[in-house]
Length: 401
Image 1: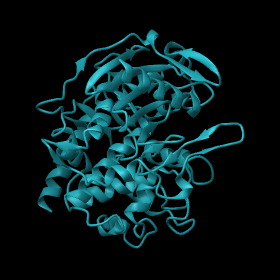
Image 2: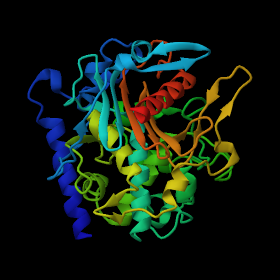
Image 3: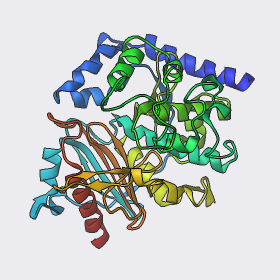
Image 4: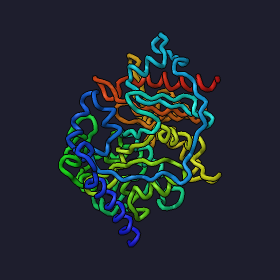
């Protein structure tokens, strides 16, 4: 209890600094900036200064940050095929409004690109790709025994959900986005716009907001992608370790694996938003993928069980498999807070709104990380078909060098 109180005090202090210690008017938190996301103009500036939208905790850089050797090629050398036509990587970058692209293969940076004013030091908000970092911590907690079983209900570790629909939901169903809680990301009520209005504009408590939701159908029935499932996973980690979520991130992932300084968003009550609002450099985004290629081992010792990689690289239910419609349009699948491409083979992705991607290919030993400001007509700007064609073409290209 004492450790929890000390940790809570630390987060409160960081939270207070973020709210009160802004040196200029332009850097003060202004939740209304959320509404500027509808247009492409200005997104690059906003994504690299997400702390202006709501409070955050600072994740200090590791004492021994990971470094990568550069052995890069020009983006003009890479081509890909789509619908019977050949395109250049430059075509993709322009169409997708890509602001950062990095490929790591055999532990070396093989391609590195920045646009829209970003550079290697820029920290970019990766939106829902944050979920995959939270999921990774669940795998670590399961391995070290802090979490006993993925079949455990959330309320075993997060008592604030006891007696609620979320409280009785298993960790496995939360990881799969199969809580089947009566909440909707894309359609139905309440949706994510209601949630963000309550939490960001009105200063609501995310724990209480999620606890108030009822059940739609029995858990495990289908796939329904919702932010609250990941938030409850973050709350489970808080309760299991008895400390604030950002301290867990720092101790289990950031410091030992050599990440650089980053920011993780908090709600107005100091709870880390486990489902989004991680801001980090492009190299650190790619770095998560690289440590997955290295089996998440630390000094040769595992930090997750061997079967964790099977769980994140494969759908756990038929309802979670990718599909292709009659027109050839891909609907990507889902595993444990990672997305799955069509015809996946040891390939899985962290995906965030407006085109933030981390493609991990454990078979061909490469990762590709992307920042983007998205498109006018859709959050991601380009289709899943084109994205998958590009990512696989990048793997083929660097494997032949």
